[in-house]
Image 1: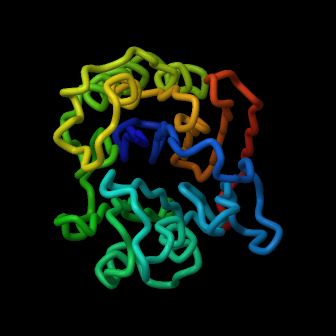
Image 2: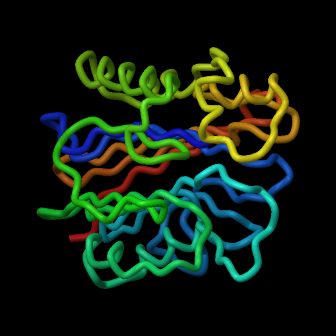
Length: 257
């Protein structure tokens, strides 16, 4: 159950403030945040099983992140990796809205955020589970494994904490602290969105913003700060199956002119 909260053009100094937890099976191999050897203009972590990514940015200012819908977990033939959506957008030429409108049905359930952070860029949200592409107005939003701003308690709590960070002082540390919330939820908080039969302790664990279970949980927390002057910070903190930190990576750069 991934979690993303973000402020789009809702702070006087930042175009985008985003904090996200990537939840995944611990057995799935992944590379940490870094510039890609085969695509030197792209910065992000990488799924080493399918080759895509959950969140990445290009020096040009193109940015995207994807979450999945928690549906039937049995393999479905003929579907492509949802992480491919991010890399496709970063390498595309059309704007975010046109890209989102042209997506086909070769993917399992997903929600995609795609943005252009330079100039008068836009941030677009789309889901292939009933939400048509739309350009987001300035504001504070939350996305987990359902439609944008679905009011699951963990998402509501995380959005409220993001609002406090925006008011009290934006920075990497308070945003990572927001993502570290391990308060377990009630299984009823998300049961209506779960298609597979999970035991009660697992349901409670994935109802928290930060998920800890032996096989599946929060693999990394990522902060994205995009200042109005084009200065970008990406910070990633990685975790083991017990939820203990494995290491941090921070990259700072200016968008290409």
